[in-house]
Image 1 (cartoon, helix red, strand yellow):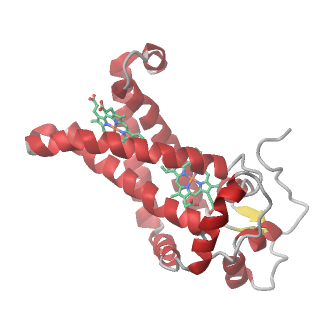
Image 2 (image 1 turned 90 degrees about the vertical axis):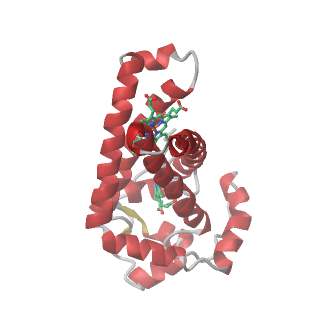
Length: 227
Ligand code: HEM
Ligand code: HEM
């Protein structure tokens, strides 16, 4: 049994994410997960087995800092070269309206795998709009507090202390969001097709029409034969 919905190239497909968005997303995912697992070594007691994977506690601290710099670079590259895409993303979030609220209300049913009729959604549905605000905010707090913790000598003592709390709370928030998000964007039977949009760049046209009807109509109109 395939866990991720089968990739179908015998049906019409439409572009969902360009290479820069995919590079930023997966670069960010790999460095985020490395930061998470090495951070957990520092955060939890008695996880020698996890520390051993990174060559011990010192190794975990080093991998954490290297991944943190990698994550900062990936985010920086995505923001500079994908500036137009980020503006489009923000514009889409500002379109939050009644259909997004309806989506959020039926979302528990969709999450549990019941077949639901998704109210017409823009590029990102109501849940993704929420994720687009909460997760990047947590990541921003992680980056900010992380560098303050890294270079404590140049910041006031109180700020360094608050940064430890901020780092921990943002880590828990981002991790909860990412767990749900990663499931929805891969193994979930209804929305798993979105994985191919982020992996190969395209999704099935019929899926896009069903899950993102407004975006599909505005972007592709009647040209459903794309690719
Ligand atoms: C630019 C990004 C980041 C920077 C600069 C950064 C920096 C740091 C630093 C300097 C420490 C203290 C290390 C030590 O005591 O040896 C730390 C700890 C930690 N980091 Fe990060 N980090 C970043 C991103 C992340 C991310 C994305 C996560 C998880 C999702 C994370 C989770 C943790 C955890 C759990 C700890 C342990 C905190 C504690 O002991 O209370 N960090 N980080
Ligand atoms: C671990 C595995 C992950 C998988 C399988 C995954 C999958 C996906 C997919 C398929 C999309 C596109 C959804 C669409 O069609 O609109 C997406 C978007 C997104 N991803 Fe991920 N992702 C993962 C990790 C992460 C991580 C670690 C972060 C940030 C810390 C993240 C942040 C986002 C954001 C902000 C979006 C745009 C909003 C949204 O669609 O919810 N993802 N992801």
